[in-house]
Image (tube, rainbow, N blue to C red):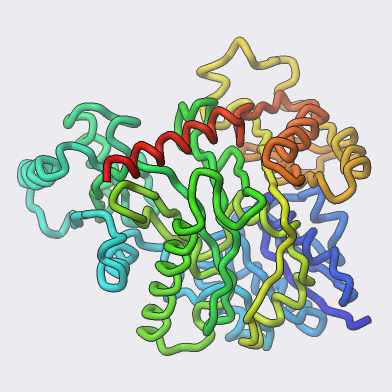
Length: 471
């Protein structure tokens, strides 16, 4: 059996799922090297060499790659920060190791403004209306307020505030969710504007889907669509998070969409990729996951909310365990520009995240539901891991923001552990996921209980029926 050394740059559960997919290879003897944000118990157990780099800075990651260059055949990068900072460019400059992710120049999630301008050129009908506000264009806040309010008049206040780049401000804000008055909106706007350019977009009503592709730089292979749950609490209440869970249906499209909606997603993604590739002219620049598109299905068709240049967390976790092809082979096809087809099993998958008590402000909003005596105590994954054996390939437990400390496992500040159920229907996959959730104790961890629920999916179906009837 051919040996292969793979370096995985890891942040959380997404990378645990990547490591699991690589480790299950039947065609290769896989030796894993992991540059991790923390001492993740899942990754540590499966790696030949494991190094903790808390800030995932590119210099230290590259040094780890250089030290083990003779044993590493390629690198997979999961989190966005190293990609945006140019990790691929650095490693490929310093070593002979190829890296699976887009080049820094084309890590498009680095700038929301660049995204909008690119999509305005390539797919204007799918681009929400937007206006860019640059601090260099204004001498005082009075003029800023005047222009913001004029734009709000055109949008009838239904606006989304987005800082161009990650900043020290309040981040993305949505009319009706984060503010209901212009003064509140403007305050949110200014909290971001003091650090750099801000974009104000029209708010689009509809139902969201996550659309991802694998690419060898010349071709894209679309992955099944996934629904993500960004809001912290049940019934889509509370602040936005990194994603509290997600689901995938048996077919490639979501239950509230149609086969035609899926075809429209494919057509739009292909159009974006082909025209973007032509503009670039570099046949390898976009390999990896250059398109992880958040689509909003509205009464006026598909709109692009945003695009990322890396696998989705949690969305890729719903998909990797359903691969029928060897994931190492898929990676080599992306590296060798020979990616033409990927096979997936016909199954549904539901992912639920368990998170620490302070995540999403849960302890503040629901203090009476938190077991104060369990906060910061060790987390016991043993019963959940036993269920993995019971369910065979139908249950996966992927630790994320967790670390080994004094031979015990502790949750950190972000999404602690992802529990994925796989079955012949969304309902059965959800039951398996929730059984795994219930088997995890300690740390005062909590989770949304309505991920992929029948009622939530029914609400999405009703929304789409209403939107279609009003076209």
